[in-house]
Amino acid sequence: MFSLQCRMREPTLEAAVRGDSVPAAGGRPPPARVPGPVLFARYAFPPNHHGYCGPADNVAFFEQGVNGADDGGLRAMAKEFAGAWPYLELIAHSTGLADPLDRRVVEAYWVGSPRLDQIGVPAIGNSMEDRFRFTSGPRFSSLTEGVLAGGVPHHSFAVFCIYPWTGLLGDSRRAAQALTVLDRCRIRWGRVLSLQGDQVVVESTPLTWDGHYLGYGPPEVETVVRSIDGIGLASELEVGDWVSLHWEWVCDRLSDQQRRALRHYTDHHLAIVNEAGYHSGPATVLG
Image 1 (spheres, one colour):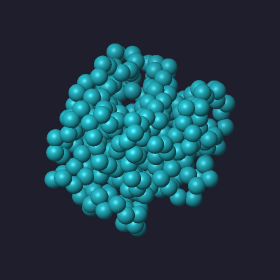
Image 2 (image 1 turned 60 degrees about the vertical axis):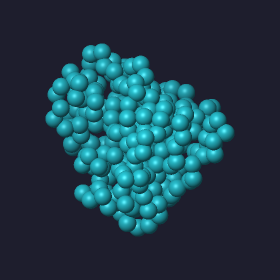
Image 3 (image 1 turned 90 degrees about the vertical axis):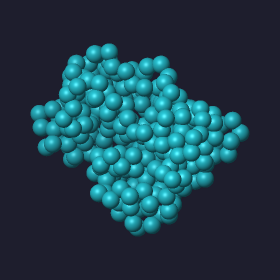
């Protein structure tokens, strides 16, 4: 059992965010609330489309997500995401929710919410031990440092604190390629500049690596995908909206508080790996 003494966590997001979902900013009504499995599909489809995780039939997964129904087919496919599913189970079990695909659980994992700060270090540590003790071998002690430093089961924790240690980034050895994988794999935020059919032009902030620390570079303009032949997973967008991005896809429209939550937990886990220094997972992968 995971019982090591841990450091005090940083101040949580509770003071800034009350509840698990919030209205949109600027007078815009919030997007229509979709069932948890559908919200999961919006965020999980991009890596599945690249063949990194989830069911082999990514077309069927996309179609199930577009269908927008909380049915058994989409739920069954969600369980095939071996990386994300145990985190959803952990969040649900630790915060008194029966369904790992409850919308509140899904939003907490991909975007972030104060729900994450309700989960104790022993519960997170035991989950990591069950999953990674044998796959990470002698490096497991380094992996646990992220838990002891206050890591919570947010997707950014998986990207920055777990993936490099367990080999889930593949065999990349070149810093530029590895940095691109880290940047695309995290959930990032961007501001919509223009809409061009199936594509969206956004301004977003990329990750940087100076040989020692991960950080943020100046904003850059990029073109991302919101649909295929007019059919997509994300909600309706307007110029000026903040959106969440995963790989080259738009996942959803974000309220101001959701954007703050996403930035908060991303910053938190970047600080953990930067503090770990030379022996952190990203440092090992990036070289």
